[in-house]
Image 1 (cartoon, helix red, strand yellow):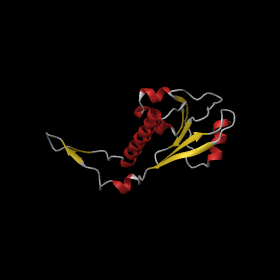
Image 2: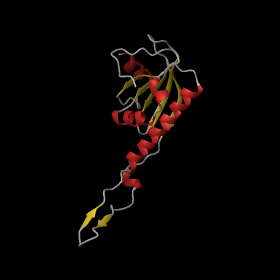
Image 3: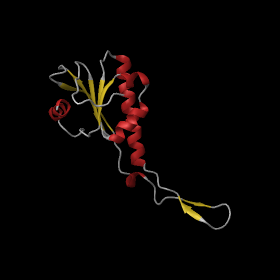
Length: 152
């Protein structure tokens, strides 16, 4: 995937994915590289409550086969697993766009952990179409603010 250059040029019809572990905005540039005009094409959301609301009680314990030693088993972080699964859902949606439409490329804007999960889940063809990656969480921002961040 491409690294973030100092000035990103986002061609007409390029998709901009703005996402995190809870929400993904698929935006399409109806403008040109000099003047962005992002329009919402699709929104995905992930109903992923905190681990404390998903897990069972206390973590389990394991017993040694010899002697009376015991040790605790680390509790599973269900929230993080949910975010990783959601990143896979986002990647699948990007793969479908790359396969089904004539798209010049993608710009991915996400926090570092979500970017890593997306990199892991994207296929080679879609990765080759990524114009830039920006490690910021802009999911809660209005579209005009997102445009400003991308052109600054």
